[in-house]
Image (cartoon, rainbow, N blue to C red):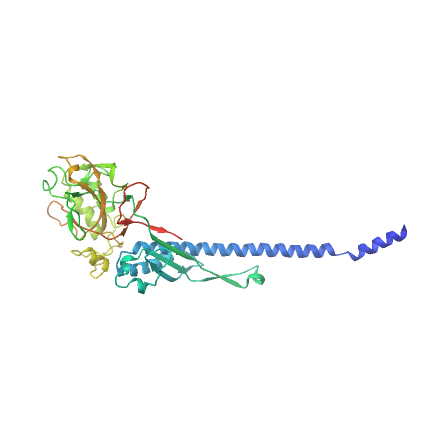
Length: 372
């Protein structure tokens, strides 16, 4: 009996310190796992920041496309500006690769190729890639190395044609049955008695019946979205309202002569040169910068097109046949009844709106969409 106790004591003597060693190894494994988790979390954080910048850059680039080589240049400038709105370690995100394509999945090319003759008109998608950003590894350096490079890629492009258009002007172009042709100009605010009737002046009472409502709507676009068809009908507005029409439209040409208009809510276009066509405007061959901060495509406007049969004497309700896009070639002069003439555009342009399955579409109006 005594002999057996001595043997057991000797066996336990050889096991002394094993729990401490096992605990130390386990603790080290736990610390490595926690450290690895911290480092991986940091990778995801940086990746998210870079992805936000890449997404914003791709969307901004698509918004700048206009079917001309200048649109490619504007897209390049927009990429840099948008990406730098997202900062990591107080250093602007750098985009090292910008590619353009007519299709989503293949055919991407650099800007030099996209600007080629006939190619710019077909560009619909932009893919951007950020510069690899080194992220220091703090806890798991033995496993992952001292640092890891993280980068992000984003692809944006045109959406399907929109069903409803937002920020359109509260005026109408009248369809008399003759096809509205690209490059031709049309009057969408007529003199008294010269068009559909003595009481209708092609102004819509969307925001309200007052002159100030028309002024704000023409300067900033109406705070509504609409599409073609009988489901959306609006009242026409009586009265000449020449001053309000002139003051609202001319904000797009950097003219502010009323207390109810201002360059913050109604900024000018980046190019206020008058008496130019849309082709000249998008090519950028004739330019005149505004004195206030301007924005691209403020002279490209969306206007409901209404069949002449919809109009009655004086005030009545009309429905939109479709919504067209027009280019403002010149501002409205200080004399006369405020007639407004604009050029019909046949190119796809980027606007604001929505798509509803089964609804009528505006095939020349799209919006930027992030695809991947």
